[in-house]
Length: 266
Image 1: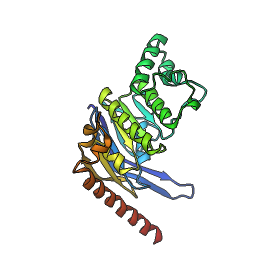
Image 2: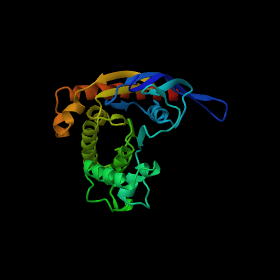
Image 3: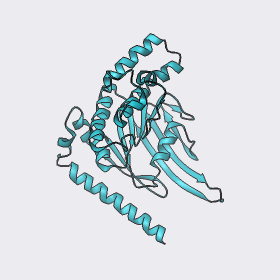
Image 4: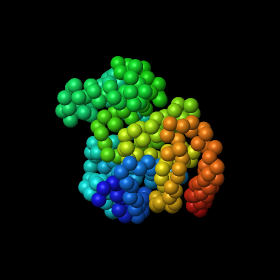
């Protein structure tokens, strides 16, 4: 079966005091090749736990993950990860960071150089190939992180709050870049975010998760990601369905947060 299939996945963490926390319960989701999926929910709903299971960093307590019919049991270059902080090598320049993965796989240097040049152009950094990472702004570093992920040619790109630390203007530019990369490469992208607007803009499919334990609460199929490719995202936000959908989801998450606070007080 092609695509990424999450089959009845649950995750329970055992605590040192003998107790346990049920982080995820019975997650079922089928993501087709080339889909752009955003995942949203209140704190404690297991978004990052789910992403770490998809990456192979964690093994679920129950259930299985399959990518193109193969079980996901450990990290693999088929599933690339982009973190909130770029996790780049400070002692390497931009080109060497991007080419690191192919180099570790033994790819010939001429092929690496060609790929790095192509990716620098895609992420808008072709004039910064020799710059050191510490010389780059936060937004530029996230562009490098995206390019480094793409250099391994993964089937799936997993993004954990990749734009959360950026200022508003840079974040908007990076949102446009994510849409451009999705359209140009045809990659499957799963993006975790705390921003409802970002989830709407970058989610061809949007998954809202509920907490304690984490589970899928509602799913939306949206037009905004497709509309946003090559367009002004501020214009997309003026779409007649954008505001009402945003308000519906905000109210949904607000009610979840209120329920969580009520439980904590009791």
